[in-house]
Image 1: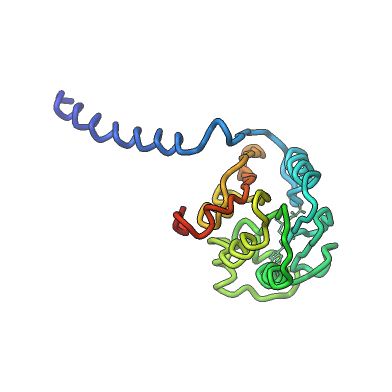
Image 2: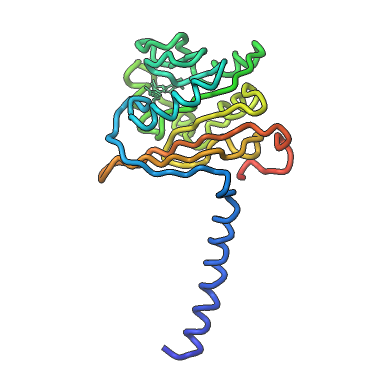
Length: 214
Ligand SMILES: C[S@@+](CC[C@H](N)C(=O)[O-])C[C@H]1O[C@@H](n2cnc3c(N)ncnc32)[C@H](O)[C@@H]1O
């Protein structure tokens, strides 16, 4: 390879590395706690030992909490799950349920946000209760827009949301949240990690500087 070509390559690579470092630096490392742990998978997310510990820790510091996808856990003050066979208090669609709580002026200091992680998981849930999954239902994992908007209204300033999934989007800065803690749970080969995002509501950011993509 000629020196010129080598030089050009470095010129192309260098900015991309710089961009990458800049992105890393934009996370306030001194404040955001990041950890990676191993734990065996479980269909009930909160049965996974380190996740259970994380959820219990934040629950112990909250007075009013909401779990719109609770399955059989009645740990939060308000619990819901679409599946009527589960132990949750309500069996409504998550968006209708959260908007109902908004209409009732409920203010919580913790929301647990553990929805189906993929269209396949939505389909399994719907099939299990005899509901037909429509195209727009499959798209819900691509943002959970109504749910995140309602959650942003339900959480009081300095309150927390813990989101679980295969990504680290969380509720986001557009809705006034800052990342507090990220726990990545590795389940071994053949399984996706579970990413647990703890975000804190910082009211001054709400609806302000940030775009939906942020
Ligand atoms: C990932 S699981 C939650 C597991 C729970 N956090 C636990 O630890 O057992 C997702 C749950 O969401 C429920 N669900 C699926 N679609 C829903 C919807 N549109 N509204 C409310 N609940 C829904 C499913 O029945 C399922 O129990």
